[in-house]
Length: 341
Ligand code: KG4
Ligand code: ZN
Image 1 (cartoon, rainbow, N blue to C red):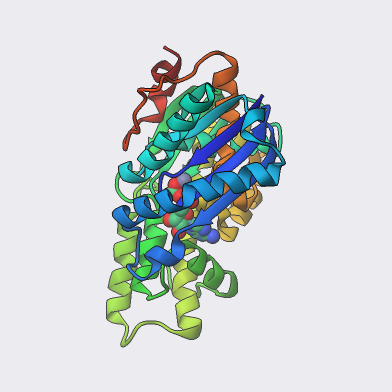
Image 2 (cartoon, rainbow, N blue to C red):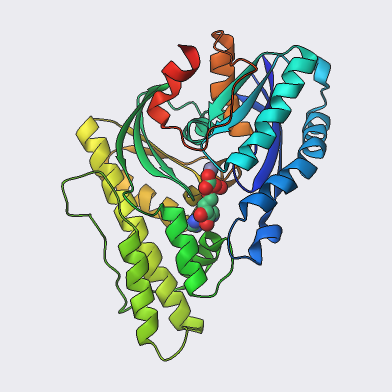
């Protein structure tokens, strides 16, 4: 089955062509980072307008790169939610129009479902596994028993990890998005004397909290004579990243132990973080579990990641109707009954 997949939930306009839920024939990603950088974060209305301008050429490019035409397609998968409603609507409306015009089956896919199944485009990771979805809007732990079978084990009670990276980067005047900047500085730095708290690490829960680490960094900066620069900046970035990475890793490994799972998949934009990847690899060797990370291009927002779930649902006849609407909030656990019921 040859699918066109579309992703417009936030600030990337992306279209991909995926064969049989496995082979990525093209994956075009038009980032809006330049547009939003001067505002220090995503401006929803600007994001929607840019998606509108970009989606058509991005789809044409995805088809051309895959060397296919609309006539070759067997179906369309699109991110239905969660995300910015105006941004989602662009992708969903485009997908519906195309599905109607070409008489193709359509399926709305959950954004986080896309992230936690993206690994299957590169390696066959057998179910069940534990998935840590760690992005700008999510820090969630799921037990994944199959496509459409997700059980929430823990989640952030305040900021998502990516949001904390972005906010701390903003405090340090590093620009937007901040995660990659902190990653870069931390790769060169040593935390030295600086240590930030690891919130909720000792508590008997698989939930996370990151707003306290963010406040600790803010308080630290306020005590300094001026914004940290040079080696000091690297040390602050390293100490912050270490705190987040430590909590993410320890809680995920604890969840795997509790659930008796041998495989862990780390997904979402923050899964690009080199410190996180390394720490997970080191700890998982000690724990005797396997940890899998998609390649960075499949970690941050992209349309190809929707191909796994899209193919699964469409091949089982679980298509969405043309009155499907975008949804800004949509718990992942509701996915299966919502689509196939
Ligand atoms: O999955 P994603 O592309 O979009 C959402 O669904 O939110 O994740 C974006 C988030 C941003 O907060 C960004 O700062 C963070 O992922 N991020 C990183 C890195 N690359 C992206 N955070 C830490 N280190 C990175 N290398
Ligand atoms: Zn995402």
